[in-house]
Length: 192
Image 1: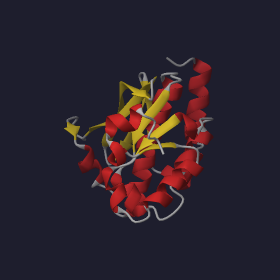
Image 2 (image 1 turned 45 degrees about the horizontal axis):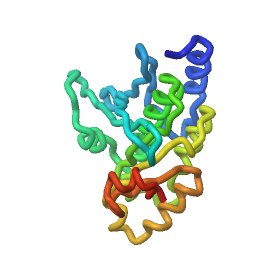
Image 3 (image 1 turned 120 degrees about the vertical axis):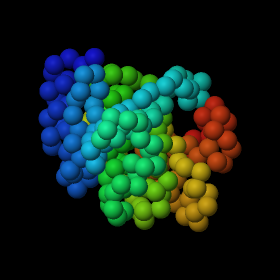
Image 4 (image 1 turned 90 degrees about the vertical axis):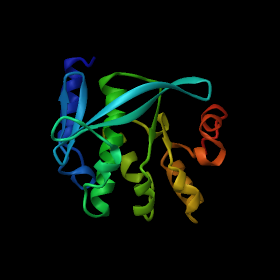
């Protein structure tokens, strides 16, 4: 649980988020976690224990609840925005929620593992990872603490080596399970 000083700093940092990155998506502290809102849907982070190499890590998953309070599949959430920019901002919002809930709200130090939505790879033409790295740094967090799991469609893209290099340049560790399989990717450090 956060102390009052950490909570006040977090709320101020949320208030001063760069508007061009995730503007218009409210993030609120509800109980013991941050919750995002998107098209009247509530976005929560769920965590499960995992390992990165032989080190304990935490994997974040998105839990979405529709306006009626019922669970909503993630694919339906990503179908809501119109246009590429809406999808990009939604994906950043989701990953930012995961990172803030893990590192700041829950005060965890271990590596955070999270997915990158496949639409992000399609829509971003260059600079993969730059906006998310900037968001993390806004909160005093370093990309090196995060492992991004890239979707299986990555290897279908001619520019996949450039995409991996872009994420690495920003400091992220990147896991591409399609290259060797999920378990082997995490256990044998096939984090490219």
